Length: 465
Image (cartoon, rainbow, N blue to C red; front, side, top):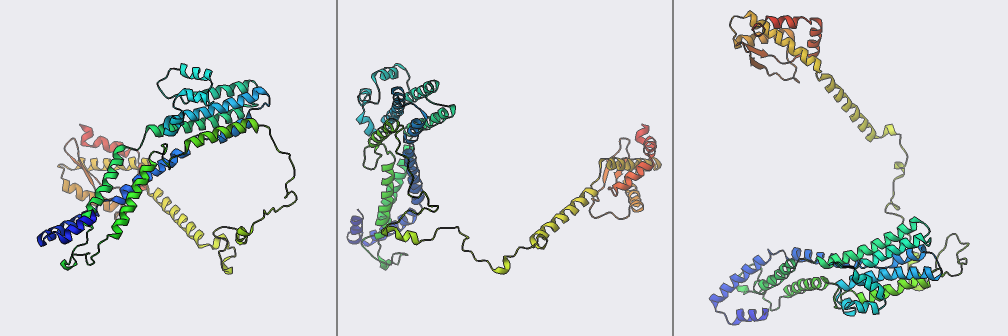
């Protein structure tokens, strides 16, 4: 299609039509670069690949469970063998039921429960029990419940020696059943179809626009970036192969339980897991080789031999750490007293400075008693001045207040506020509150004349009313 458009542009279009096509090509090339193809497609492929690998790790494997069962359930007689094999068969049956529910290949191998019974994963009595339980949901968990009941029975019979072994066995079974549940939920909740459609539409729309935008235009027209005239867009083809291949990989991995060559070999996993688990709990139970001394019995530093093909590994020094070969000058290797270290001196100096600042702030902060004493003293002084003056004048009050401030405290410290507050008394007088100058002095004066405040309050106009 790219070649057809290029031939049409070069040999069949008129000059006016060529100029219009060239503008269209520049427009398409400019706005095609605004599509975030790498981000959209990369995020989608990352999501699909992570989901694909998570589904593989959730396939139930019986290896840990069979080891715990073989070592935890004791008894070499017929009863002990029957318990171990039956419990391991229940675990394999649970894995088969969930794989049969999510995998097309496994379902075609076991299309009905009759095939499961004929394959030896379930007896006819167990099938009757399985079908007698009426439930609209998937019953892959039923063999796991049978497993726990047999484990409790074995504990009562004394074949499982202690509760810790029973706990470990049930924990491994719960992990096995949890993997089965995760496979079921992965199959139930898939990647949203709209997301897949959006990514596919974006990829094909991008390259459809590139069919026009990536055309080589006439170099004589002087368009920016079109100085070279070629017939094959090499880098556009590479981009097409990369993006399209990326999308095809995601489409192949989005459902790994199918029948494609790249899907999981679920039937092989069923055969392997069933055979290995049965051998571990039956034929290998209490089957130990003869205990004998190994060849390095008297060697405190055993060194397994190397072949000629791997001899170069022996010559490589062992890794000791990133700082093993770090060189430090000898004059910097001597330990120094702590009092000579500059960092400690700076830290201690800043600590003492902070303590001094904190002590100064705490000493300057007024106490509640001094605040009340200063407020009562100023109130009594203002009431006395109002009682002596026949007509209250705010200006005269302010001037009197300034004189009193000059007599009492002198200049106001820079760290304190200098605003005054005026309050209209209920009797019509104006009360001016001067700034607080010294809290310690106010408290001392209050303690010296405790009755002056009450006397001044009785003489004020507000008190007489």
